[in-house]
Structures are given as structure tokens and as C-alpha cells.
Picture (spheres, rainbow, N blue to C red):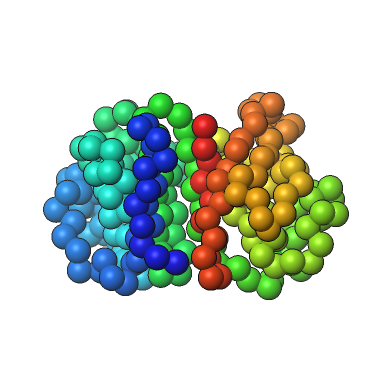
Length: 209
């Protein structure tokens, strides 16, 4: 998957960043609090992932001509801007990190590598109705997992089951937008549209409005 920055609308953009190629990039733009957080990450790979995600969101904000405000995580693990302006979601997988920002609406983003093991694991995160239309295609299973993760991150609360509470409408490998809904929680009746980008064996999904 190539490194890219894409403006979705005047209010939103996303970026994908190669962690390896950005390893030596300057991090001077970080807030003081973030610099402390980075200094406390002892594991080399986790440092790379953390830096890659921050560089991705910096690129996203630059594309919207917005300043970098710094970010923190709440008790649910969801990232927020330190100045309370806009909504953000970060993700990483393998050699890549991705970020999405929207000025007004909550967002979620997820990045996954297509893996065969998603098929036998399907009953753990898929509703029986979803298993019926997905067949045994590892790409579709990975895509379903990623779409549900993006919805989970967008709604921003823990205790939501991917299998029981997030149900997807039938989709195919050709679909670029997948629809889903949250059921059976305090956040029910929320509908989500999720955009799909895939390249080689990587899948990127993010919520759109």
C-alpha cells in the first residue's frame, strides 16, 4: 500500500504513512505532553508505530491547512484533540499507519492485512446473517473485521461487541462503501457508511458522512 494523503471533503481528510520510511522524520511538531509520552515508550516497534500514526495525522491536518493541536486518549482509548477542535482516529498495522480527521463529526479508521485466519475466527466477530453472505473468502472476512473496527472506533465507547452489536448489510468485494448499524446498546440506531480502499493484501476502511 502506497503512502498517500487524500482530502475527503473541505472538512475531512485521511493519510497513510509508511512507518519504515518515516522512522527518522522530525517530531518537533508534537505537543510537550506527547513528547513525554513518546519518551516513555521503551519498545522500539511501538515507538515506530506511535510516531507513524502522529506523522499521518500531521499530514492529514496539513492537507486541511489546520494546525497540529496535540492528541490524547480518553478512558475508552479514543483519541481526541487537546484543544477540543475536531475529531480524529488513528490506526497502524505492519509497516503502515493511518489517520483520519473531521472538523465536525466523529470518525473511525482501521488498517488490516488480508489473512486466512480471519475465516475460522469469523464466528467470534460476525453475526450469523453476515456469515451467510460472506462465504469463505478471506478478503471479505478481513474487510468485515476492518469495517466493524472503524465503526467501533467511530462510536468511541467500550463494551460494544463486534458480533452482537455491529451488524453489516450484505456487500461484495466490488463495493467501495459498506453500511453498518449499531444494535442493542445505549448507542443503538446509529447508521454508519464506511469507505473501503484496498491494495495488494492491505485493506483500509474509514467512516464517512
